Length: 187
Image (cartoon, rainbow, N blue to C red; front, side, top):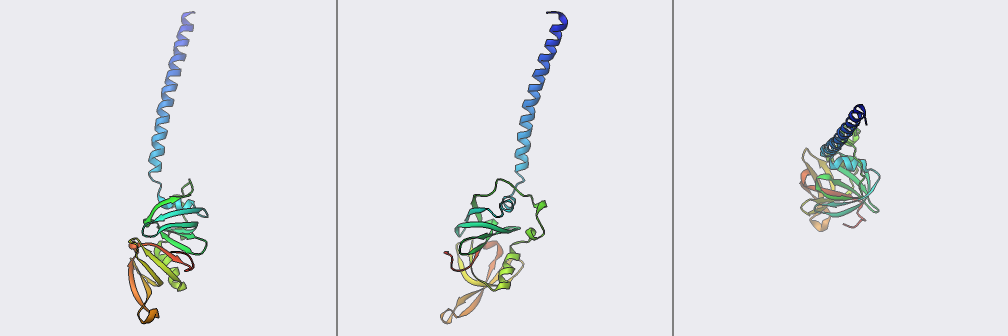
């Protein structure tokens, strides 16, 4: 082998080693970037990406809520079950099964999807729908949503005179786990 051939062989070997070292470093960098980017993914963004998907939620103070994700908003989602609709507060969600592998970042949400839990509760108030409001503590109120304040909801619950009269109860929005409308569904 001539000295030129040996020199070219040495350069080829060095180039292969450099390429292998670069590939190893690049693989680690891509992995680090992927982990760093995934840290920005929120539960809400995964729920929004799961619209029209059959899921199962474990909700604090409620238990399991199964159904298809309908509308979504900032901090809540609508779950359509066989006999009832559920407005689920994402702050009370402990686990989700069956959600999409994808995510929809908040910057891609429509203006309607940016509406908070108060918006969904106002809709129930406008409809004067009989519902069951579940608190994160496990307390339940069979009620009609009357009004929605800045950080609370006013509901009318049955009480007194054989349950014919209604009395007002104020519930902090942060304490709400879920609201079920369609009273034929099991609690």
